[in-house]
Image (cartoon, rainbow, N blue to C red; front, side):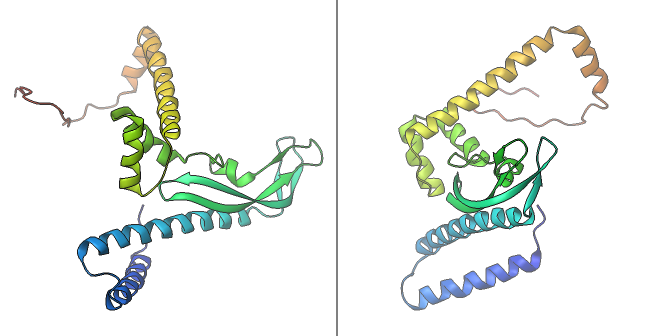
Length: 212
């Protein structure tokens, strides 16, 4: 994303002044404390901003929203929700809509943004699955806390890892079936417009012979 240079400069200026106050008050005196303080501050800013952005998007939806039945659902209340993200638990309030015709009730902003309240965000889910595959769940929990400053349970990491694994297995099964379909292979080959001039790869291992 191409973030505003002006916005970045203003944020840097504010943070610089804030940390300068802590240094003058002798609450911070070395690079380690500075770095850790920045991590904690940026996490708090991210968590608060995440929630406010969702609330702003919710407010844009207005008092009525189209329902699947063709009628207009009306906003009947606002309810609180939370989502576990890379910044920790994000809390926000969003509109609750009800359709008088079919009786369906829903939170439009959650559906529009692909959010499952009380669950793990898509970004954190991917990261938890990565550590869950590589190391034991208990160690993964400690690793996530050290790297992201986010506390998650062993069971949360286990669930996300298993869910991602099941999805991957479904994708691979689909690819295996497609690889036996001559029509699919021909369509795929016709869809390749050009061959890349250069390919990059990496090898993770010890004493791996690599030829020219």
